[in-house]
Length: 331
Image (cartoon, rainbow, N blue to C red; front, side, top):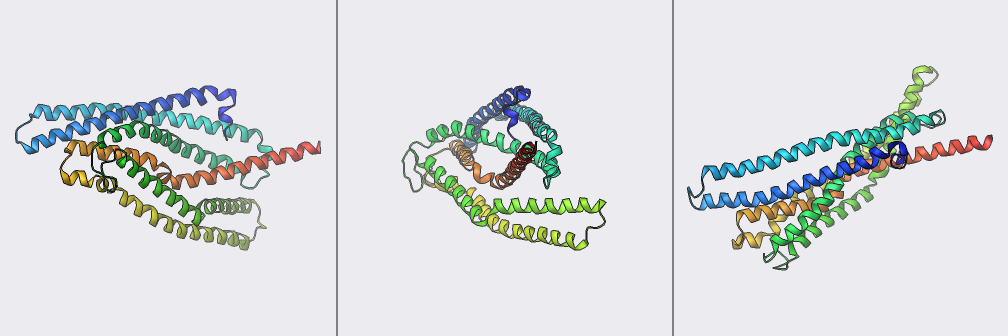
């Protein structure tokens, strides 16, 4: 799976391509930081206008909106470039995997579900790596950029449960985010979601294989097809039930998540010691830090699927190595 990074044929794409993607994401995060400062200035401007009618001009108001438009245009351009380039990068990664499987396919075809591993799992692997890889790096950068902003903005503010402790808001974000993530990891482990996803794909592969055989072999009995599909049905129903319990916890946490920042800064809002602009900056910075710390939580369903695909591909490659070893021992 990772021959892409140590095969000289792919060095240019693997390393220069990775650097290009990371730089594009870093630039997007820098623009996001500037937008956060813009939110503070813009909402302070609105507060002045609301407190004192006609205290600002239309030129000031629309000039501020124009500044946001410039930032948004740059962010969109970088986002489009990053998405386009990343898609090409990951198709090269998939190609490196497929090249290897093609080179050993005369042996790999003996393994059950080989065609699914080569065609379906490689494209799923590349697509998931595209979304998870870029979002992970973005989460790390957002955390490093917005953590000091949140620290600076919250100095001297009364925070619920933490008082005026300078690390109160950051600690609150950490406890809420990491606590929620650990809870969902524990819930997924109890419900055995990775194992269920793996079994589901394995039973689907066995059912698909017997259908392909039945196309050319009239001796395959309908009973065999029914037995295999019965296994597919049971694992799907088990998956539906377990994901129902998982999603109850996940969705409840996400709904509570909307209010977490407002609850923590409630003493400062009630006391009226922050402006509307500062509040918007705080809420947005808190959301960025919180979102970064919740990376595992937000990506958990996708991570479960990736873990299942990784497990299948690793097992497939081990079986290829075993077949090659057996054939070489016969020589």
